[in-house]
Image (tube, rainbow, N blue to C red; front, side, top):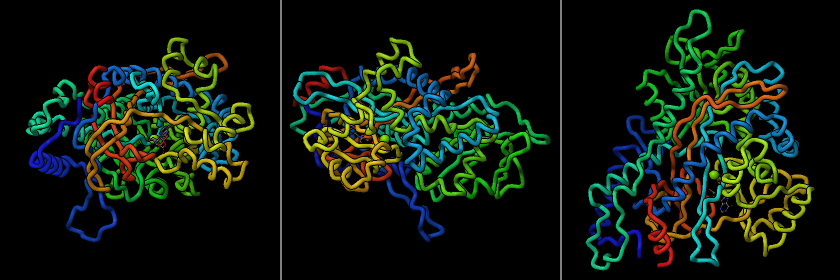
Length: 516
Ligand code: ADP
Ligand code: MG
């Protein structure tokens, strides 16, 4: 069986034209920020697949079920600064981002934290993993990473998923091609609706409500503040969340990372955060700060650090708090794969379910596991099956396969401990068509499923220790990104992949397409 169905040239041209119209009318776009045409709106379409990509229904459901356990785990870790310090201390010594964040945390801790609620907006990313020598074996879910800060792509996927379902409804995928009779035709029930935009705005709204009324004298209004990158080209992934909040009568503003945070916010003596919009003669008390920036090391210059410190010291509910931000470091992901680590936070059943999604991961330190990893990473025959990762976000930082050998040899050995080594996930290869800034593509593709977990938790004292108590959680929602199978990286906005949606199928269809 083949998928996607073969289309005639006329059908293909009509499909591309329909997609372009959808992209314009629904904002599947990236803004061109440095243009001088004042009266024009200039954008590029964001990369998209032309068809939804096949995905096993059972694993899609399993990833959703797992998310509540991942929420519990990452909330618990974010309130365990002792364990986090143990895990991150080597990194803090050599990594500028880890040390900047940890310093800010220390300073806030000394003054005392005045907000015990945190809003987690996580995205757990999975690839399917299949043993290449066992072609009849069903693939499994393997986690690529879990993001805890500025998780992007939710709104873009929402739009692309709506587009695929629209195209399906209009019969754009029903082939006239004479050779298409054996191709897989998906039914509309295979295309799951996407509610990521709703989940993100509802999560922020729940945190806003939990903050309660304004606490500073003379102020009645509270607002959510988005902390965004200056010259942001990815507004389409953020603005609709703001608009949805305004639609629920929740004031939402945005301010750029760094200087603008310091210029337009202030702390009251009792640490309420006030926002003073540049263009409006008002001050509003901030209930929730939602970071869509602040994940890159260059953002932590002196001004950037002061800005993050001011926000962190304040009474606002943060998404994420600085400790929750640190839990997204790959070093933490690797440490959670060590024997016994999950049992600190989860029941044995939960730990078993989660650990099944782990690919083997190693530190690159002096421990026996680290020594083993160094051997693996320095031998081209074993390096080939691994990925070397620094604790950085946003794509473009990993070193893949045999390149690791030369990379490590030219990197001072004292810095090796800031990397982790991860076994390569070997995904089954499917086919699709893609349209992106790289042009048109037809051929083998690899997909990554992202599950958004949105949850609000409270730090509570439990004897000597602190722990996280879940206050509210939303149903998980998803994103899907798909790339040319020959490309290692993924970030869509950096041009490596495309937004996509899954066509959920039973195993027999999935496996027969793989074999075709
Ligand atoms: P980033 O923080 O840069 O997004 P990731 O861990 O997500 O870091 O890695 C970037 C991309 O590299 C992933 O989206 C995936 O396509 C690829 N990748 C990462 N880890 C693996 C792995 N173990 N096996 C195969 N590909 C991987
Ligand atoms: Mg990633």
